[in-house]
Image (cartoon, rainbow, N blue to C red; front, side, top):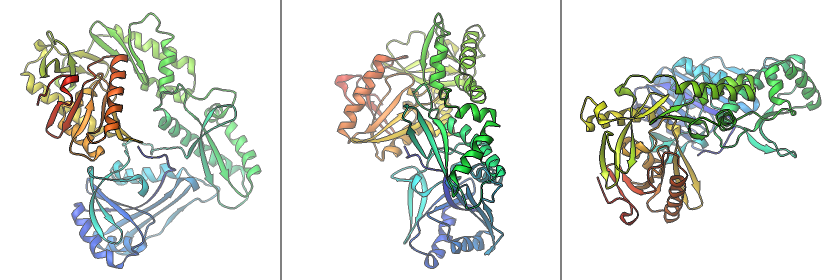
Length: 516
C-alpha cells in the first residue's frame, strides 16, 4: 500500500497513439532538458500522462510541437493551489492560477473535473511521482531522468466518479483519545475576511465528505473525525471567522461538534444494525458485509447504500434501524431469474452433492455461485444449460471483468519479513479468483515473482506471499488457519503454489495433492 499523502500532482497530458510514440518524442527532447528532473510516463486510451517532480516548460513546448496540444496541471491541495496551462504548437497559453482570495476553490475537485471533462482516463489523473511504485510487473511505463528507459509501474488506484481521491494529511489523537484526520492548509498573505471564511468552510464540507469515504475502510466502529487547521499570518482572526462560517453549515457543524461522537464506519454501522437483528439468521457480519441466510441462499444487506445516505445525515440510530429493516425485507423478496452474467467461481471442500462442480485436487472442487449483487446461491448441475467447463470459463470471465473494474480490491503490505497480498472484493468470488489466470498474473506482478504461495481459507479471502519468503509463508499458514477456523463460509487452510499457468498444492502432507 501507499503511504497517505496530501493530494499533489505535477503532470503533463498529451494525446498520442501509444507509449512508443511518446517515447520517440521524449527521446528527441531529452538532450535539451534539465537532467535533474524525473518523469514517469504512462499511456491509456489514447492519452499519455507524464508525472514529474515539477513541470518543465521546455518539455511542455517540445511535446506540444509534436502532438499539437499539451496540458500542464500543477496541483498542491495543501495550499489550495492549482495552475493549469495549455501549450499549442510550442506556444504557451494563458495560465489559470489559484488561490485568488477571497474566492478560494476546492482545487482538487476542479482539477479532477477538468481532466474528467477532457476524457483523461481516471488511472492517469492526479498522480504524484512518489506514489508510483516501480515493479517487475504491472503497467508499462517510461522513466526519464538522465536517460529514457522502459519499466513497469504500480500506480495507486484511481476510480471513475465525480469526486477525486482523498487521503488525510495525518491521523492524530487528541488528549481525550479521539482520532482526528488532520488537514493542514497554507493560506496566502492578506487580511482574512468573512468571504474568506465562507469559501473555506464550503471547501471543508466538500473535503470532509471525501475524507469520510476514504477513511471508511476500517474495522474500527468509527472513523477519525476530519479536522482542519490553517497556517496564516492572522490565525486567531481566521479561526474566529471560520467558527461562524461553520455554524452556518448544519452538516459541517454536526461533524465538527466535539460533543457528538465521531462518524460511524461501515463496520460500525453493521455492528449497530446487529442489535436490531438479534433473532435473524445472520450468516456474516463483518466490515460492510452483512449477510443473512434464507435456506441455502445468502442475502446481502445494502450496507454501502445505507451508509451513503448516513453520510448525509450522520444520524447513527436511524441508519442502523434502516439497515436492519432492509435486511429483513430481503429475506421475503423473491430472487432474480438465473442469468449467465451472474455466474461467479468459488471453491468447495468436501463432496459437492448436486452442485455443478469439477475436482481440482482431492477433496477440493471448483464450483459456481449465482451472485446478482443481492442474493448468493449455489448453482446445481441441473441449473446449467451448457457443460460445466464452459460455464466455469464464463464465470471466470465475469470475475476478471470485476477485478479489472476494481483493482483496489488487491491490497499489499510490506512487513518485516516481506510483502503479503490480501484480496478483498465486494462479490462472493474472492477465493474463486485463484482459478483465474488474470488474477494470478496480478498477484504475481505485485509480488514481483514468477511463482507465489496462496491460500483461500474462506469464500471471501485470497491471501498470497512470495515462495522465496520463508517468514511470509509462516505468516500465511497461521493467517489461513485462523481465518478458516473463524469462518464464515470456510473452505480450507491449504496453501497453493501459483503461477500464470500453475495451480498446485504447496504441501501435499498438509492438504490435497497436486492438480493442474
